[in-house]
Image (tube, rainbow, N blue to C red; front, side, top):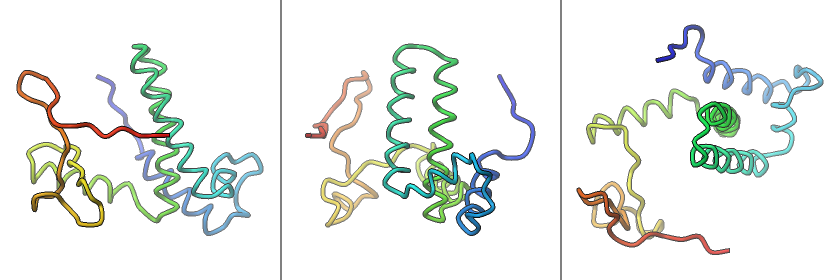
Length: 146
């Protein structure tokens, strides 16, 4: 197992992005982060999506090294986007901890069917599908239409 020793790179990146947001002129001329910030949230969000797709592709290919690289790109772009919303890595970690305490594991919460009416069936989120003990998916899955 690889153990990282040193300052927290996600917090360091978040702090650097916040500095660039406050003082854009402090950015080095070739700063990719400053360029991304200048392009706006829509571009930042698109980059997160692009990197997530690349993570999925490398995972399906089974290329561990490429997956590590793409995951780092995804985390970088996600932290830049979150920083633009003034959301710190600590807020995300606190949410994962809250889920762990509530559910025994920091799992993804199920989504509500109708975002305007809140959680389905009075729960913390309703899911349209799950997984049975035999690994088979249950319920219906949402599909994106283009």
